[in-house]
Image (cartoon, rainbow, N blue to C red; front, side, top):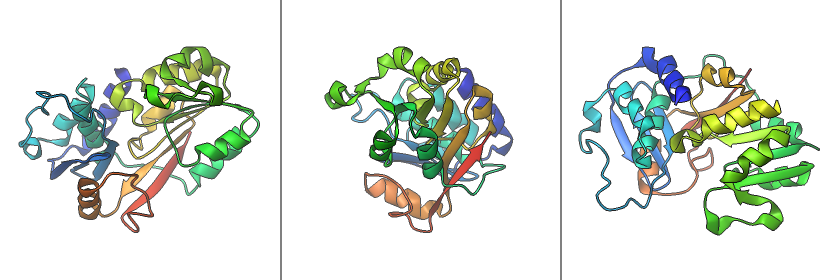
Length: 247
């Protein structure tokens, strides 16, 4: 899990005590130096799989929680990735529209997507050929190229653009997907609220990193605690902003 090692090492100078931890039905938040988000994986939780030290997480440092990223209990791993984000802030973000740039790069190209994004239907229209990897077998639709994630080894090496959700850090598939993207020499994007805005990604062949910066931690943590659904500027106006970094 070298990628997680490197992301934690990069963020470690910002280590501080944890102020709050929330595990919502869709999103997890950790507030330390900043407020970090991550997709909540591992729900529903099988009986007996309690989060390690639950009830005492705010007695830890952000680095101690970041170590939860290595866990195969995916609720813990969600907390860990949110903790990494809570001590990572973009050093050289650029004022670009990541969605528009991705759509432009995908035009007429062979595209592989791991994750679900609001602009996926537009990608379908623009790409020459597009494959979407899906973990949930009930959502597979081979006729429309929505296929099992285990097909990545067969599909990505022939693609020109690879788009990966940052939540692949949680289920530990990120490194494998990035290795395949490097074999393809594809234009590679990692994005979503789970994505640490860290220059470490560039060492793994990523060209564009796009994530979320929380401006109002209390408001965002309250909302993710009380509802499912996407956290975006529509439901969190003035409370979050999108940031992007280019290699």
